[in-house]
Length: 118
Length: 111
Image 1 (cartoon, helix red, strand yellow):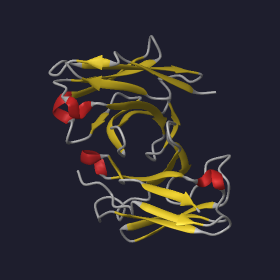
Image 2: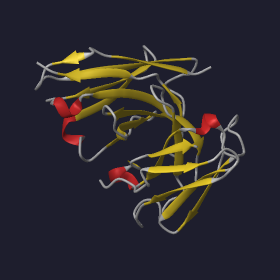
Image 3: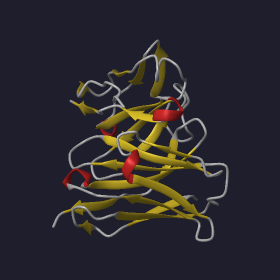
Image 4: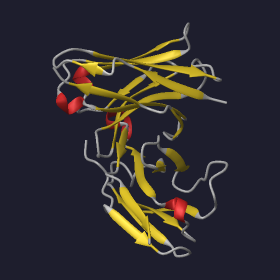
């Protein structure tokens, strides 16, 4: 059973960098899968942030690309996201997910709320 | 990166059908059969209900079906049940530069 669990700081100050980690269990992160981050601002819709393919190829939302880095740590079977220079607009629930080459996402974490505030 | 266009709301009585549209462009929905649909209940993570336009993952009731014509994809929920009341989102692959675009979401109400 594939399980994903996000972890993050919960509260981040404006202009700082937000680090998020997604721990994967029941599945090897080195497998032929796509690993993604998606966020949802309070009361709003879903926004795709970034995806990394097991070969290391990365894809970023153009609107966030300059501030985002996605990476994989095979030794810990987890993947991570770093979002630089955060503002209040980055306050959201952040989800990590696993998907396939056809760009669907069939396993999701429960999400972690990140608030940007001084 | 433009979002896909969905109606903000849809509704139907139990047993009826409801269809949700998802309109994109020739750069996303119109070019790729990589349209997915997700169901999200309040406070929960999204759940994949349709992939690759028409495919239902294991465990998803056959009341859910997907289709596509040109730049518009659609999700139909037949035989509406109370538990179908949720938000529904479409997504599409949009090429290597934009990768993934989401729709704004549709709130389905079972009357």
